[in-house]
Image (cartoon, rainbow, N blue to C red; front, side, top):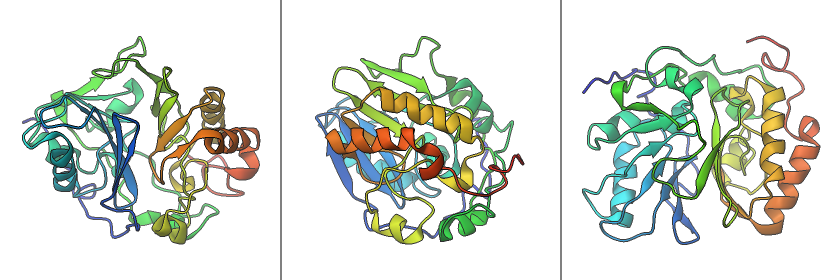
Length: 284
């Protein structure tokens, strides 16, 4: 198959949380599975042989764990209809090539994100100088190189629909990456936010490990465009979601989610934007 690995994106990252390996159902057809410190989402009603979709692909070396969790929910030898990427940072595509060696399925991402999964462009280096906790300092170990999944890479439909996810639409939510997307279902207010915002203070190693619930801005060490990130949070807050699965942290629901997301949108500069760092100071 026409795919190429990157040695750095294949390197295991020694960071985890108390929730690693756990899954949390949200309604009848959403399931948030925690892989070390990041969430992958299974969309589809559980049951052997049922059709389903995978959203994001976890940390490096995670393909086997994701397949095992998927098998428990949907049955073995039952690949998803598609894989949807909110974005292509290493902790959201870490298991992708291993999964595609078993699952012959398309991988959809925003047009601006395709260069990072077709070997054409690397992300900027993480910002180790940014104001924040220990994870920001550790980010120098995090890979930022592109992978190449070849012909499996597909552009999300321009009409905003999400392949094999009837009733959902994708929303361009740039800032954390230029091609970042979130997924929303109007009928019940379900939101898959990726890293447009998260529900754990991701630069704090203690909070990452304990998964303390806190609606927060995107991870500071990998967010190069804070103006766009602010607008994306405001866009999602206007949706008034009833439930949200984010890339990091536990799901949030109801009034707590709506109130905290509204507060983040209103006070984004104070709550989310670091005081200093190369991206904040204008260096790309």
